[in-house]
Length: 322
Image 1 (tube, rainbow, N blue to C red):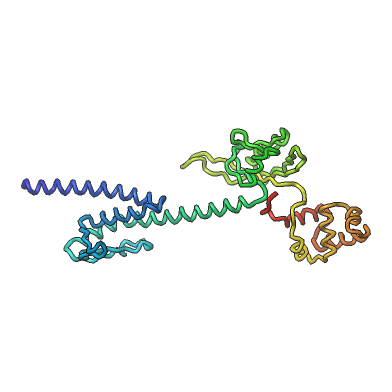
Image 2 (cartoon, rainbow, N blue to C red):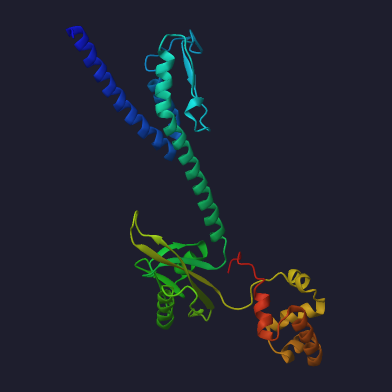
């Protein structure tokens, strides 16, 4: 091997090392663009330089190229490498461009897919957050140690009021000591069999406002990557007790084919209670109330007034401010 040939070999190896370093940096930049789409413009320039490093860029008036020497293209939506095509105007140029494009193309496609997945996930997360924030009830997601993981807008208002619930060191605490013990027992019960559900939690504010809390276990999530421990989570839903929330009477009437009088009796039972009190409010005889109640039982498939109350409560919209 002559000195000239040896020099050429060294230059070739140095060029290969340099190309490899450029390729590694370029791949990193491509995946960074998946996280920040604004970087794609700069990354595309780097890709162009990598694919055709020897290209000269001369332009007339800064607008039109002087000559079109070579070109290569590929369809990014398709995974097949054989969709890479090139136009050769100089011997060997298109082959080299094609080789470089084939190397980098899978990373571009994968980065674009990652970017789409991230955008879709962000949109779904934003939509879910908006929906949860629209709930009139306070929603807390806590872990097994009562640490607050997530809250909706209504839950944050409850914490700010500090009348029934508060946050101490980032943990959910009921202001009443007995209610707090019940809350902890209910959260501890979520670690047991999934078919054993804790009962309602009565929460009473100093001003007499009554709220009800319900605890439901959530599917455990990995606390860390790989084979990390599973973190137990639970949802705590808190809403104002009572039947003062507006209900859609027309929907109730249509659902059970109720007459206007039957509907008035039904709503009066929910808000007042016994037949004598309902009769006095509506200005009718107690026997007439009992007759309408019997028809309500028949039409709704219920047997007790308490069941009528629960039935009407089921029509209350959760998307309301308390």
